[in-house]
Length: 437
Image (cartoon, rainbow, N blue to C red; front, side):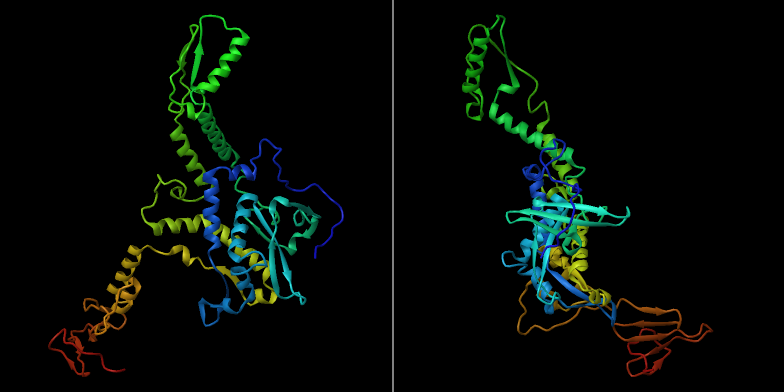
């Protein structure tokens, strides 16, 4: 159910295309690089599973995964409501965060008001949010949803509200706020390119005559030039001039305007606006040689700020107070984004095997190699490492079991224990083990 409110005040923000200084959502999405960036970011987060964790009392750095037994996790990852799956929901939330600065969703509970049964994201272009305050520093919001079903009113604190960036905790700043000039430049360049293709040679040339041309002749000449020579289909036609007309090419052409360089600069600016590696929207840019480095940068600086805000909203809205007191929290599993290439996987397996962390069987499984039936499992070790204890003045070789007591520095010979527990002062380096303590 909605919560009716009394009184109407001017909305804190209204999305309108009438303001010429404002870039609309539709205009941003009409820019291919911007649309690609939004899709890359939203799709990357949408594929990540959400988990529910609880701190592990037996391990201060560990946690207990409660995801399999929690219906809210299954709801978010699988079927958020009767028409939308979890992947679609997460992608829409992230897109709305980028385009509108906020995503608002209605949370539906069962009759007990304890169990979440569905979540319905709003279409943010139909939402007006009003921010009110009674004391000047604490705020509360009222959301007006104007849809085909009429106007619905909601208290903002009862909604699942995910914000990209905010000053009041109710409204957010979109990716276009503060970056209108970047998107406007991209739109202008796209318009110039389209105009260039439509008009062909006309914008880059001029017709001159020593004779005066009447208005009627001017109109006829303009129509003739437009029909015969303008447009990409008429490019390359031979121009025939009469009555002393001369054709002059002017310097305002794509080469003079450095069209290609400007286009590359715009792609770089859009990548910076969305804080993503430029190579993701520009194949000619390759800042990072390693896919792993590229993914790590993308995760840390592009996705994590949005993911953390998403997690905070889930924790604040979907967890009960007792669950919060017990330390429960929702967490996106970002491991999928860090999947390595085949070469990276092979290098990692080799490094672990050479360090003695995994066996030859485990290394082969990691790289997808077949294990022969008569093959024996073994670990790679080395006898070239010894451990010295300054406190006890002893040296231990953990690989072959040699234990050497260096004495008390009063002239005593070092004592070396062999495998039977006997000691010998004659030969340093005798293999053996330290006696049982």
